[in-house]
View 1 (cartoon, rainbow, N blue to C red):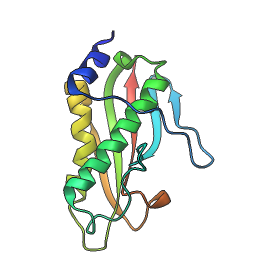
View 2: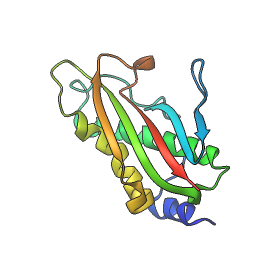
View 3: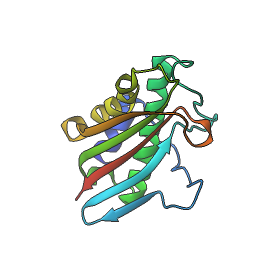
View 4: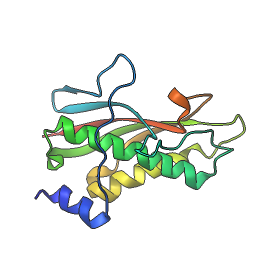
Length: 152
């Protein structure tokens, strides 16, 4: 069993099946030693977390961002032919939060995804990041995050 698979078990994390695209795009692209994972929304088998932050509280938003992170990891695992030990570094995450106009704790919400990457990958999970509030997200989901990952 790989080091990262063992770490996921220690953390009590089971990765979901990689979500299928809902429009005309691919879930990830490999270019050289980088994997670009398309935006993953706060989807889960139970439907996930939808709504706007400001109506939803920050903790719910962080949970939504964590779901995005789990979906990113599921796509990354597929891109790495099932071997997450190939990860060298989480390079960049871009987070989008569905917000009411006066909600400004956007970075706190995206921490739900960022913290997951560090929990799973340690220092290799530390990354550059953007966190943006938006008026709406696909299918009404609360959060969407895309990522760039370096692999070997």
